[in-house]
Amino acid sequence: MLAANFGKIEGNVIFDARNQPMIGIGPPGEVLLNLRKELTMAMVVTEPCFGCKYTDCVTVCPADCFYEGESMLFIHPDECIDCGACVPECPPQAIYYEDDVPEKWRDYIALNREMAPQCPNITEKKAPLC
Image (tube, rainbow, N blue to C red):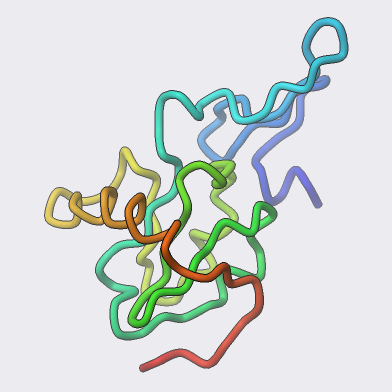
């Protein structure tokens, strides 16, 4: 189950869907979480979510890093573990890895970073707006 949500497991390291190491045990037993955290924000909710706000994605998020705005959802950049579990669950295909956000929606990277801390956390599915 864990490998299906995260990608693969090799030894003591769990990899994300992009084959990047996320979680491992380092010396001496130190837990290493999300080795990509310094490099990227992780996942970003973009324009197709605006006005629809499907919440299927929040139910599969192991980090509970989704936040509910009035018209769309946001992902908290400091909480997302970059697992990608939310991507296939988003009906309007609004969630991208930061590096893959289309140019026309690049402003949503900053918007997620700004708005997530200001909105309430959401972990349960609700009816969409559209």
